[in-house]
Amino acid sequence: MKYTTDMNEGIHAETVIMPGANGDRINAYLARPLGDGPFPAMVLAHHMPGWDLLYREFTHKFAHHGYVTISPNLYFRAGHGTPEDVAAKVRAEGGVSDDSAVGDLAGAAKFINTLPIVNGKVGIFGTCSGGRHAFLAACRTTDFNAAIDCWGGRVVMSPDQLNERTPVSPLDLTKDLSCPLLGLFGNDDTSPTPEQVNRHEAELKKHGKTYEFHRYDGAGHGFFYYFSPAYRQAQAVDGWKKVFEFCEKHLA
Image (cartoon, rainbow, N blue to C red; front, side):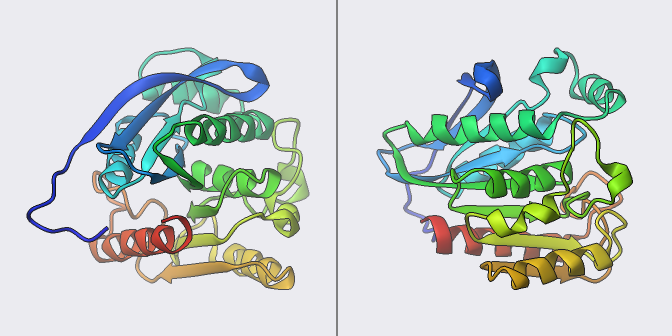
């Protein structure tokens, strides 16, 4: 979106109820630009710290840039409380299942695509575990026109990491990726490590997928998180620029 000083700007934001995995009714945060559209849409897969204030801010950020944006509560089934308490419960239970996360994210895409102001194109964005879930959803469904994985750990999984909740390494599903992929990674990260990012990139090349990977020196896990010691200002500014350029190319 090109900004000018004479623009009429505004967004509308609210909590909504939407159909998730197995037809469950879950809550989600929806923000949309004011106006008739049509606008492209984004689904946000929140990170392991939970369905938190940061993801409200991300939802507003995408809406302000002209995207109807929804952030579903992937931890809905664990009950309610502070994001930290709910996330701790989910973490103690071994995380949400891949089936549950993919079902909720696909449900969000279908829900947002029913809105008359949406142009029919939907992207998905996630950080940390949400980056993994974004990639997984883009491989297991055809609901998305673009996917953004920000430092998603456990895309590359060893056999000892597989279990009932995460039965397949997302890397093994790369052949089924149904849309262009943007990946942003810190070279100081340990999950994923640079070697794991290399393996992921090699698999994307092997299957002829459309993708962009950008790797940042001096950055580790969570370098967008301005409230954390992990924040890296220059890398974060460039990363967000890459995100919106990618969205503009594939969704607008």
